[in-house]
Image 1: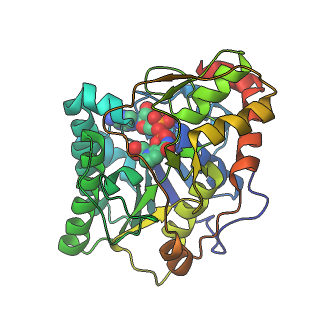
Image 2 (image 1 turned 45 degrees about the vertical axis):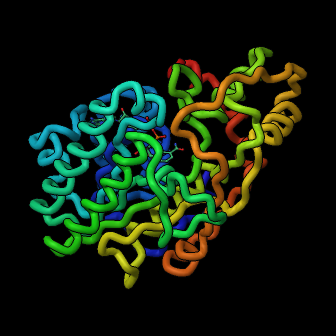
Image 3 (image 1 turned 120 degrees about the vertical axis):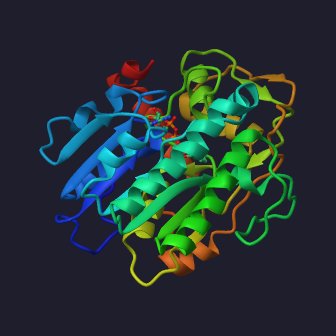
Length: 333
Ligand SMILES: NC(=O)c1ccc[n+]([C@@H]2O[C@H](COP(=O)([O-])OP(=O)(O)OC[C@H]3O[C@@H](n4cnc5c(N)ncnc54)[C@H](O)[C@@H]3O)[C@@H](O)[C@H]2O)c1
């Protein structure tokens, strides 16, 4: 992974806090930062949905530190932010259905936790915070592709929590002169994404099923489309957003995607080809809170951040399947 860096700045004197660093996207960010010799990389994670195994490969690196703690706790955020230059905030309770089952838990972690972190970052004089927003903020708007300036009404408590983050980011940036950038991720997939449990995302769930020769379950008719984005592209966007100079950083949001969409039925055909599976998927009812079609306009990230997706979907799927064949996957199952 990451044969060439996405940054030109020397980061050996810089310290980074990755919240949610034991999770899927966070641990990929840690991998990049350590590969390119960041001065210090601190992970704050309570292991609610992440795994110690995801950060085990880094534990012997002298510039790496894991703090097991909770973003909803002011003291944990304060401790983690001390001496930090940049924050990559990934910690949250993901999943639309989880938020429908337990809206309060999603609210507390995603909103209260975000505000606690912003307060700690403000007090520690952190230079810039880049945080994970979500394509779910586009809600019921049907225009495609989705551009940052036009959103609809959110369709789930999870989407509301991410939209809330964007509003708080704008207010904190204005009120306390902070640099805060939101990245609206569109269906990120790749190594270290949890394939198991009621709230697993489609791609790891489907790959896991095909590799076990079991029929994956599709919600709805499979004609819904998504802009599936390999995790290396999300890492690229984070690194560019956190280090780029002279960019709009006062509460700005950027789409992070590839800018291409595919239906779940077509995704299934590609995965069958790549895994060699012959099983047919089963279909079940549509899920409440899900959007029908999703496709990002990525011009703003291209223009302002110099972001260009480097890994297209099929190559990303190959890399993800090859991770499933490694022993590492057993540790998170
Ligand atoms: N994966 C996607 O497609 C996608 C899409 C849109 C947005 N996002 C957002 O990106 C971020 C990362 O998602 P991911 O897919 O890597 O999920 P993940 O569940 O693998 O990672 C989230 C991490 O946050 C940690 N965490 C949860 N609650 C915490 C708390 N109270 N204190 C400290 N740590 C806590 C978890 O233990 C986990 O390690 C999240 O904010 C998510 O909402 C992801």
